[in-house]
Amino acid sequence: MKSYFYRCLTIILFSIAAVGCNKSDNPTTGNGTLDQQIAACSADIKEGLNDPNSLEILSSKFLDEKEGSYRISVSYTSKNTQGGRERGSATCGFVSKNATQLDPNDFQNGIRKTENDMSRLHLR
Image 1: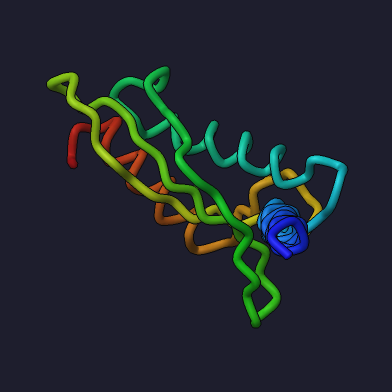
Image 2: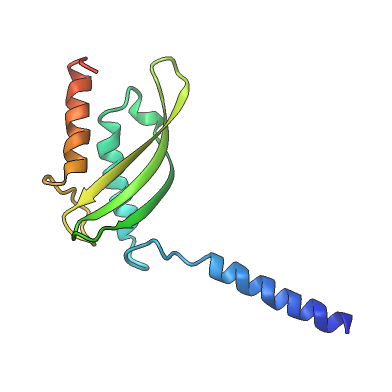
């Protein structure tokens, strides 16, 4: 009886672990489009950082927008001017679901560009 219980428990735990490994947030499976979009978004985020080399991505996910926009959300940490780490987040819009090019007409990208320009001019 105990061995039956342990076998069932092992099967249940293995099933839960296998389901937990599913990458359901990825808009494409197997071709790395989300990874390429994260890289493009990271490059854009780095433009506004005091220490671009300090960027560390904590998490990312695909945002399923109803109005037809294709965005990912990225949480990150980076070093501030005193060398301490601070958390941040950004949303990057793309031309299409499988594109790696940022959408110049996406308002999230426009806000980040404006903030970066203000930072370069020391207005922020």
